[in-house]
Image 1: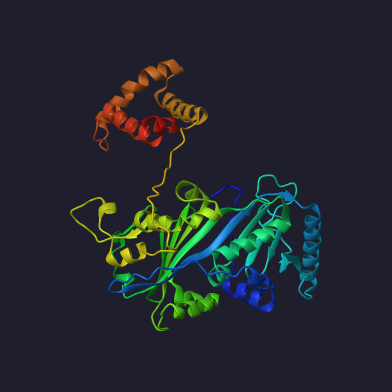
Image 2: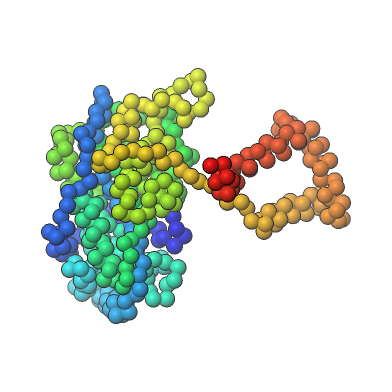
Amino acid sequence: MSKNEPNPTTVDAAKRFASQKETAFGVESLLPHLEGAPPSNTAPPKYQNTEIIRTGIDSLYLSFHGSARLNLLSRLQELKEIAKSTRCRDERTPPALHLAGIKFIVKPKGQSIYPFVLFNNHFVIRVASEASSNAPPVYMQISSELLTMHGYDAALEMSRRIAGQIVADCNQGTISRVDLCCDFTTELDWLSVDPIAWVCRSNKRSEYREANELTGYVFGKSGDVLARLYDKTREIEVSEKSFFKEIWKLRGWDEEQTVWRLEYQIRQAFLKDTASTNPDTFIDKMNSAWNYLTSNWLSLRLISLNDGNSSRWPLHPDWKVLCDARFNHVGVDDIRRARFEVLPSDYSIFTGALGYLTSFMVKHEHQTMTQALAAFYDAAEEHFKIDDKRHETFAHYVQTKLAEKRIKFVKLKQIGELE
């Protein structure tokens, strides 16, 4: 995630959807010109107890660059001031701003580094001021309803038209975050799953329950990837996203079974390493990204007591169905992450080393750096001989750490030479 990307705030679902119902926005006025089928699903794979209903993109966050339109910024400032005064007097809804034929309301407050926030029931748009040099001029969140009901291509085209009216010479947009999801039914009892059967690249895990019923898991926290597995049927009772039920019924849902959702929230850093931040080419990488995430980032495994490496355990058959989910008819490529650690700076190396060395000088009453350096090696060797927690020699420890760091801090130049 870029350090300049704002952290989306969580809004109480009841309040959010109440505000949407109170105001009629004309987003649909543009849709007839952009109507397109949502990303297609292949025939749903089925195991004994698990069946995929649909796959799709739940949320899409785009950054746009261009030159600020000063007249629009002035208008946004006016509407922001009106919104402040309207809120204080508790009067009617503030006047709307129309962009690409769509009506938006300007909020009385900005968010994070963005002074202007525009919204309707399909978009939340943050707009930077002319003086903001560290942030994309336009940061746009597209709703799951628009993406689900009208498709990725139509939503992308609409977002570009809107962004083009906010900034001049607007680019085609960059993906800052995208949420891939798969809705499915299963007879698998999640409570019966042994916790060690979950194999995840993150150690962070949260479990959610209502009374004695498990409602979901969250894997990961504040990283490039976050996974959610939850009871979507229960969730839409709160979020009021009833349109999902109509989609599910068209895909064969019997209106009785619980629908679960597996969802991966993917940020820009992951996309740069594995897929693409270009919204036009990402569509061709979705299947590959999903396959990697369900096979390598988070997976449910059959525990094998004879193998201490859980990543080699076979996939649970029901989880294998989810791995095989597809978002379109594009093939699957191997997209193992190419992550390379950056060598620490000289500043951090010397500052850290001198911090420990001066502590050694005080503890052992050495007066000069030369004296301390001469004594350090012998003291370290002796420590490894007498410390009960150590099970190796000083020399072996040094060689082990050296080998680890040669791998961790591999240089890109070295990679190129090996090829």
